[in-house]
Structures are given as structure tokens and as C-alpha cells.
Image 1 (tube, helix red, strand yellow):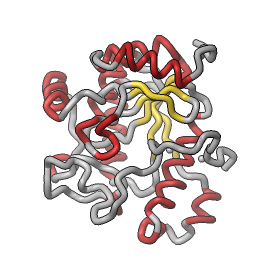
Image 2 (tube, helix red, strand yellow; image 1 turned 120 degrees about the vertical axis):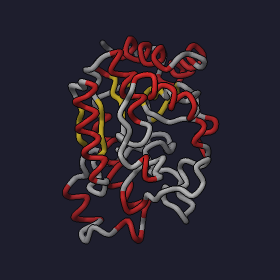
Image 3 (tube, rainbow, N blue to C red; image 1 turned 90 degrees about the horizontal axis):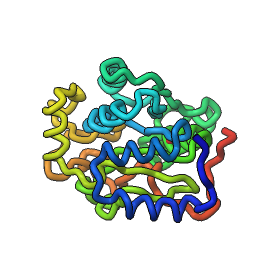
Image 4 (spheres, rainbow, N blue to C red; image 1 turned 135 degrees about the vertical axis):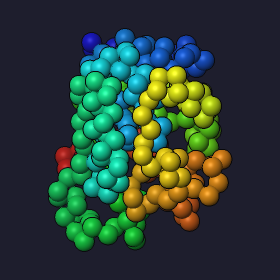
Length: 246
């Protein structure tokens, strides 16, 4: 299904957001798939809440490409969970995105960049790999939600991002809706959730939370960092070096 560029991604995102801002997440996913077909991808961390979006998407099409950032620093439990969920939900196209060897050799040869430059570590292990993968798509889906706070408080349901249309089907849902959906469909939980991890990223930068009301407080705890970088706005025309790698 070809992407209609006549309206432009910014205007298209605005019109879709107006149409879908109060819609059920599955309705949003169905509209996204109708618009973009095989030019639509879903980006998932296979983290604490990922099963909800993945299950919803599997009801629309099990063939939607799922992009998974295997940073090389993930918990073993996350890697196991990724395999379990893909099999349980019947996902046919889960793509493991890994950092480019050249980027690691140049920027993180000792595998300890996370200790001195978390932004740089995220850039080579997440931002660059995702940018390279998204070249093949015109629309993509995220699992972000407003109740996570920070820059996500004003999250639209549909937005323009670096010339592509980005869908946030769960933007309107809170923890109660997520928990109810998981219970209704008897979905398997990430094994670290029971150990106090309501948000799960790379093991060096993720801790259990002290305040369960702030689900992302265990990410980069003790620093001002709140996002890995894949959802941060860039200057117009600024694109990561796709010759080298979300």
C-alpha cells in the first residue's frame, strides 16, 4: 500500500490525530494499517507493558513488522520474553535491530560507554539502529503513554516525526486500562515486573522503583535523562547517519 505524499506527513498526522484522538487503541491500529499497510512498523522494547500493544496489533495483523532494539545490554529476561511473546502472539516478523559493529568499535570499544555518556550509548545502540530500519517505512507505532509523565504528558495520538507519521495508540490509556486489558486476555507478564520493575530498559540503566506512581523513575535513576533519544525531536533535515544504524 503506497503512502500518499500529496498531503505531507505533518498535515496528514494532524488530520489523523483529529480523527483518532479519542479512539480505542485497536481502532487507531486498524486505521494506521489501512493507511500504510506494509510500510507500517511497530517499535517494541518487549518491556513491562509491551504485551498490550503487541496483542492489539496482532489482532489487526500478525504480519506487521515489529522492530526490537537488541542493544547488547538488555536483561536476559527481556530476551527470553521477546521469544515467548512472539511465539504466543503468533508474530511473524520480529526484527532484532543491533548496533553496527563499526559504531561500537569506534565509540564504545571497552563496552563501558554507559558509565560516562548515557546519551552517547543510547545513540549508537538505539537511535542509529532504529533510524536505519525506519528508512523502509513511512509510518510507525510506539507504546508511549501520557501517564508516564515528563515530555509524554502532552503526547498526541498521531504525530509527525522526521518526515514519517508516528502513531501512539495507547497515549490515552492509564495503568488501570492496561492492567484490565492484560487480565481480560490473560497475557503473560515480563518476569521482572514482579521484582519491582514497572519500566524496563538496559540492565546498567534500569533499577526497581521506590515510587510506584512514577513508573519511569527507575530509568537512568539519579540523572536528568528521561528519554533514550529515539522520540526526541530533531532539527529539520537532521537525520542520523544511516550509512553506518533505534
